[in-house]
Length: 522
Image (cartoon, rainbow, N blue to C red; front, side):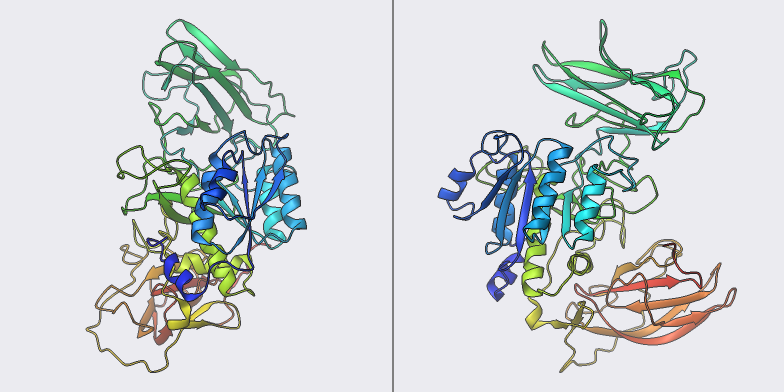
């Protein structure tokens, strides 16, 4: 709570009152005990969509709900138990019917869609999109698959088996005694495929599990298998076979819970629905450190979007999972399942302080106030950065008519600085690379180049150069993908500059948007 500055908001009166948060999870074992100990509120609403197992199936949801409660102690909590995608749709319908503002979903689903948010009706993608279309902010764990995911195109070893590395047709994974390991393979030939590949699991004696789904043009491009190890902990090997295929599409292989497989690909390791633009996906940073957890799933998505959206703290102490020892130890509640409810709780605080905020405005506020980590600007590891609520808003600013935070500049003084360059996307200062049209990109201003942390506005110069298209640039305190005003207009092939004075956004950031003359699709 303190590490995210939620304590300051609670002290200022924003405690989540009036906000309904639904925790959708696999079970809430021990939740009554947590209520008795004060780790959950005395009053919660439960919804059992998991066949009568709400209080027995798993304690995972209880630990998640504890975090939401600690972040937003006055929010109204709903505990909804599910077991299948059908249950998930039922839970979302319940959320809509009961006026839920925030859904917290620390679960991931595999092989339900391409990974671009385009899942068909009844898939987690479609369910999350429907929630967002009905004004619900869906906060989702990004997943813990960065080292349990492999991606690549099929490379035949000469006998129909895929090469994961030169000379190696197998990807190794250790399975503990009595443990069940699943593997999920999909290839980029959606929604249906006539490219037929199969998936196999071997031990030292041969095949122990396999998936040989037919793909003849009407089936999804997926294979799934699970295996329970009856013996001692041992190494097993996963393999992909070309049964009847003529193309070599991109493959994504997930072995959830495996920890680290032999050949892994961190990029593109977000499962559904975290990969959807309808969700606020949250990666994991150990609460007392500034580095990404090695297992935290990373973008980009298969269609090239940056994900996750934020990073939140994990390895935290909970009544359910025990106390934190250190970032390197297997202690406390670790994983993106723990980081995501911190963001959901923070969203409840922002919504309670600003009841008129839409789901998109709550998300934008959290993103613009985040603490930038990793490469400057938004990236595929931390998103906009680590969750960090700004100073309590009543002491530092107001909200404008569009619902975005605007710093209070009354009584401000001018601080002269030696001119310094805070943004040069050609060399990665502030942001990296050319701008895409209608895509806002935020960068840190305060704390750089002598700009004090208390600054509310800056004056300077904005220049466009090396442009490959004409248009205009919008520079402002908030991320706006479709601005209706311009800071600098420019033709093709002619460097242009303009002097500006502009208010800073929450967290001391600015956001720049390039707009081409052609409107975005849709």
